[in-house]
Length: 115
Image (cartoon, rainbow, N blue to C red; front, side, top):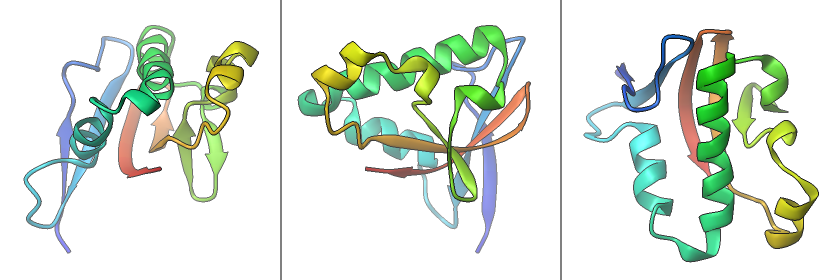
């Protein structure tokens, strides 16, 4: 299977470059699929806002490993450092994840979406 990497310029900063993978002949990257699937989902809006807030903070502060939740071979957002007790109370399921491979403090690849 062919894999292509696309930078996500709207998320990238001088501190961190964010990329997403495109699998095979897909037209959308994994991040674009994630965004399309959940951007209009009112039931998951609190979770999605936390993920986007996490990405923004990471773009400013660097992709430190402790900002991510470690789940198997990949890391995931939201990480515990961005989820408050109020967030958990308002969204008790908190099952939405955006998976990534953190190469270093300045390079993150979004690899897959799960929910």
